[in-house]
Image 1 (cartoon, helix red, strand yellow):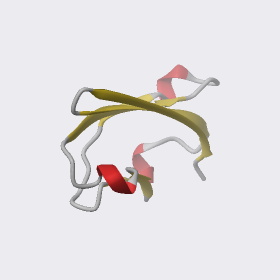
Image 2 (image 1 turned 120 degrees about the vertical axis):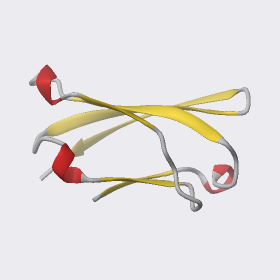
Image 3 (image 1 turned 180 degrees about the vertical axis):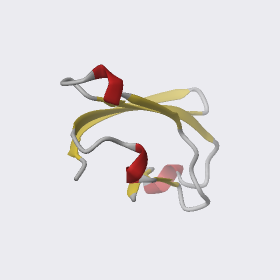
Length: 77
């Protein structure tokens, strides 16, 4: 499993957002997901739904009227 964790100060707030798993090598491996967090502010993603490759994960989310954005490189094994 892969876990996306919101900052502690945002965990109890209403959050909407998207995750884009971007694969530069093969666009067919790209995945776009809506952010769905649990009560701890975490989103758990089943890695079997992702290809075993390198991704640039682009996360954009909204808390109230404030926008946030983060990019992280990961390697799914």
